[in-house]
Length: 180
Figure 1 (tube, rainbow, N blue to C red):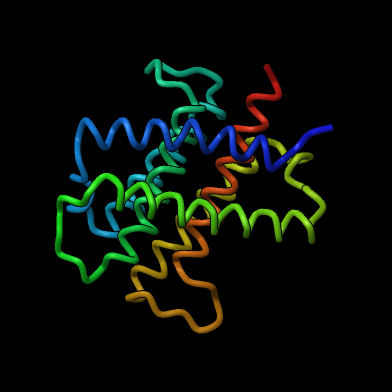
Figure 2: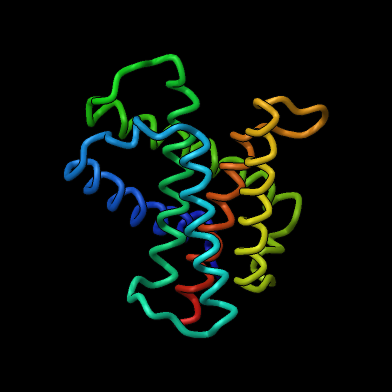
């Protein structure tokens, strides 16, 4: 029997490890990115996955799994940036960033668990390409909300969309690991 919570934690552990290693290499240079730039980075990664899925081949060696990891980490950065919107610091302490990363991943995992309860883990029967399409749809929703200066009439905000993109990416990583 599959244990989604353990699979989720294993996927996130890989993502967090990469995130923290890159932070040691680059610091928090991502603090210079505006929210719209983060959204565009997520778009680029999701679009590359879709392109590879549709063409069935790729010319650059970076695998699809790495792109989903990138989406997760850029979404985590976006959530951190939303919290620190009025904080002008570029260089953030390692421990502070690690705590913020963990905070948002834990909130996102709780959202996944709540939705899995209601939806009965329907994602396990979905195609990975559908998860990619859902990520792209969420990116376009975020872009529209950004173009509307963050205002929505009835819809959830960008934070909920980033969390959904993280969860869809984790689901894709789980499904890819099960195929091997």
